[in-house]
Image (tube, rainbow, N blue to C red; front, top):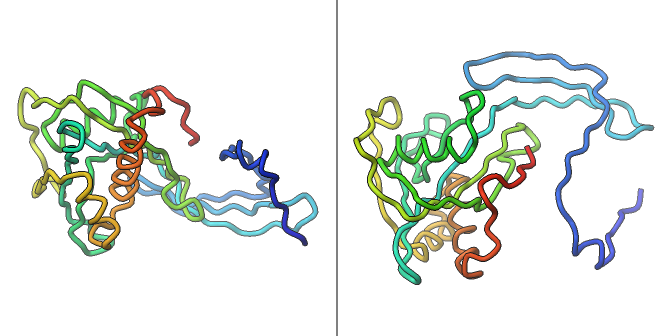
Length: 216
């Protein structure tokens, strides 16, 4: 089968789009506290035989690039957490699950910023959206840019992985270097830092409002 290549005019308007395929059979293999393991027999093309696909079902998540400092002096907030599946202490950005029914994503992000960093933000924008691993999970993550920061009224009582959080304010340019040098591995931190750096180069123009459409 030959490959199709878009014309320059078509490529100029490319974008991801939701589109489903026929699911011949579906099974839930396992259900945990947060995620589930699903199995689908799916027909990828009308004339093809169905193929088996297994993936985790996930509620989705939000993350926050919290930024302070004026033009050219921007700093981003990083936090160190232990992540058991990879057996590592990772430098991350504030983040959390969309696990409260009816909670708007930007309000979930504001809640996570306050709970994890004792910070409030006066300005919120959408920075970047991505599927964390679209070949193996339906998890979608939206990263917000939070600015005009102020202290929360009271510190939050933290537990589990968050009980031993270590915070650091890092210059945006330094954070980009840390990513490119392989010193930061958390995907939301990598994507958020690089997106913030790109947004600054565009003088913050084109950032989407918090209610912007989210392909999830």
